[in-house]
Image (cartoon, rainbow, N blue to C red; front, side, top):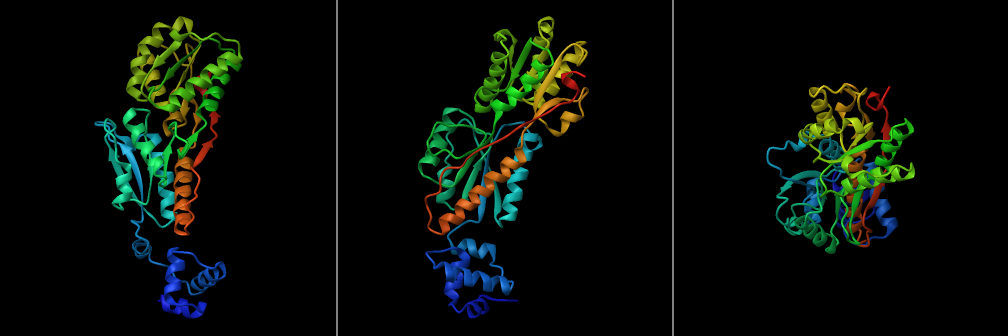
Length: 343
């Protein structure tokens, strides 16, 4: 098996120089760095990832922090499973470990301590909200200029790192689709207000109505919390208003599935009595009856992109380049048309 001494001999440098190049430690002439890398490649020498992390004072872990919500199976939800799938792919490809951590959403979480104790080298925050406890924690993380990324939740901070989808455009496309099919009495079942993407969906809904010259009617706006149960609970209100509704736009597939279940139990025929467009394009969307017209959100790609960008930031910091800019990425959505919005 090739060792570091052989790489040093072939490159014409010391073993210490080989170690510094392969660990990304300190300044280095580019010609020397390239010579070492070429020698390592030629000899098929691979640096042990764990040893490399210890040499740099690193944990070798990218942390993913999720909210602990009692009795909610986060990993079975499409949103979290897809994001984690993308993150895991990037972490595996980058030779890093993945550490899952849970926070209590009701108290201020000390993200900074994760770095201070070397539990993680960077972290991605999932399921964040606009609650004051979370805002305080994320602002402190941003102030420290540590490598992190928030998924799909805006905060008012100049150093905020975020990867999100363009939910305003996605919602606009969904409602415009209904309008183009001749429907004008369009209701909206939104998710919990503490999430910025709920605001974005509302903005897209309003934009499409305004553009079409349709007056907003607050009595056609219903409140859920992104769960199937909340969608089913809203069914009684929607059924009550059925005579003055052509269609309903729903903020995610889980609520839409619950709404459809509740409406069918009340005797509603779908899509004849009511057209429905949802959001996410989860695996279940194509198996409902009728199959859901929905907005496809690239959650997997979002997770992978966030992790890739953080690992790149870590590499830049190893090269003493501490000028990494905040991550600001917004990915496009796509409307997937099926039968729930009409044949």
